[in-house]
Image (cartoon, rainbow, N blue to C red; front, top):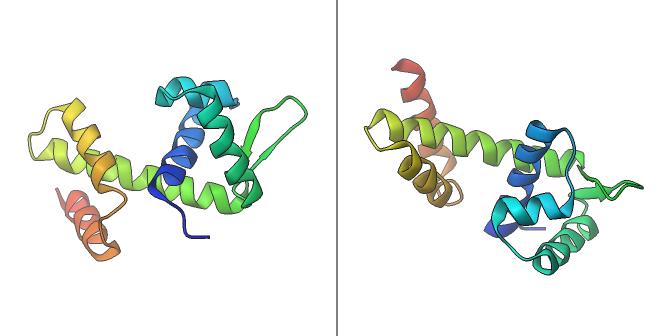
Length: 121
């Protein structure tokens, strides 16, 4: 399945919440993204059906191996680009917002070049 940007954002946010709280519920995702619970429920159903997440008996969301790989990739891109923009002098909040916009469309070559440049700085 080719993941849409919104699905990538959901997986990234699930990973972020998991790192912060240790567990993830749909309401946590809805709150974090400022989306309605029904919208998140539909998205979670699609992610589950496509093998990116599972639910346990407590309705906690868990990333599958495939879902975790996507989430970690997106989070790494987001953090790397945020750092890059901040090093350019962009204010923190704007750097994070811009990173979110760019992380999905940036080529792997450009991303790797930015990452290498950050490591040199």
